[in-house]
Length: 486
Ligand code: NAP
Ligand code: MG
Image 1 (tube, rainbow, N blue to C red):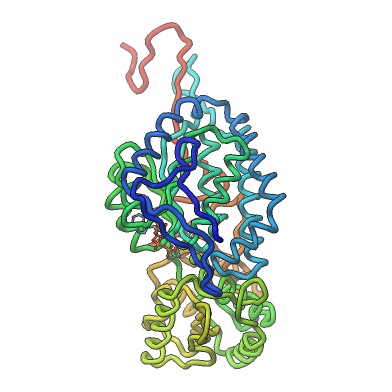
Image 2: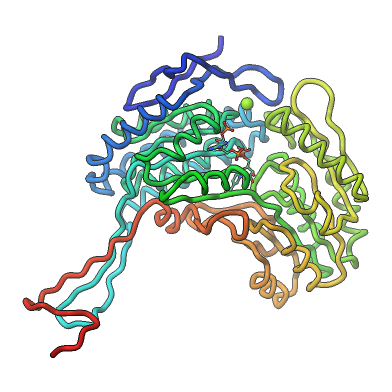
């Protein structure tokens, strides 16, 4: 018997008004993990109401007090890391070490944002008038909507929840339809940590109904969204005047220069390309290799790729894709790559049998105008793109509409710094893969990867708060800025 799970609205676990449910499946074997509420607009309204009612007292709670709950969340997550990490693997598919990493990232961000409870820094500055004091403070925004994807089913909700809550906002949270159980478990942890009723509300259900209702809701003040560019665009159109944070897709390059440590680069490419079965927004899907080392690099890459084990993430290196739709989408892209004239080095097949498994796939001779070099595949597919020099490498790297992560392997410090300057991306790694963000640094991208917002670190605080500017005039007379005295 699997569990049946409910929405969490105003501090209570309740059924959807729709009377409908949906299931979550383990992508490695198709087993059912639980049933969940297929919510509708009435449920969203109830959650928004609860969030608005709770806003006054939560926003007036001193931030260090709010922070105590966040620290408690981190402590509970630490105790339950093994159990929840396994659940991430069972519901999302990534290998167990990464499932545990997902939970660790949540622990880290709750701890970090707990510390922000004693900072939430504004600044003081000078005034152009005497006896006048100027400063800024950070204020909460209000009741906010959070919408998340399935690929980091604990970590991404944790990034948003921790920052939203420490800033004094209340929340309506809609997780991805593919990973509702991880979301329910995380909200149970917040409940156990003592989050007051109405401060966090969970509504499960699909994007076109629950998601759109949240985005359009007149009583929510901000939306924080992580997901695809396509949905991101619709959110920008539907959200009206709300503050909107969009963290969207990527087509992230790793440049391997002629002087790179090739073994190090191969390890980075494997981790970036096939980690999380390529289903990361920061996945290394393009590998731009200097021709002088191409042959040697490919031999090493192929050798190590063949050693990867594919199967249930609890036991293997490369887990399943999230669902059958994604599996077939990846395969369609591989067929397109072959038609476009890219050379298939290995992989390229759906693995028959139970589960959504795809062979780790490497293309070489990929050129920048090919579809497989421009569009986000979100699967275990690496496109190797040979180049003749550094300038060409940068040009190829920047030739896509995305700009999330990027990396360069070189032992030449001049080239490393030039790449840092020239790569069009929100993140650049030197001698390390495209993945590996830490929670105290900002995360986000340029170009179509977003709308300029950043999550995590201090910038995560900025996403979920508004700046208020304060002037205190203690001169005892009417002083006028910009106006000359008579
Ligand atoms: P998605 O299809 O865009 O869905 C993301 C979330 O939006 C889900 O909760 C989805 O609900 C919901 N949604 C769908 N349609 C909606 C609508 N019209 N209005 C409001 N919400 C809607 O993305 P995904 O397939 O879950 O995730 C993969 C994508 O996320 C990739 O493009 C990846 O690069 C990106 N991503 C970006 C980052 C980053 O930080 N930049 C991190 C991770 C992933 P349903 O689940 O019910 O469809
Ligand atoms: Mg599932």
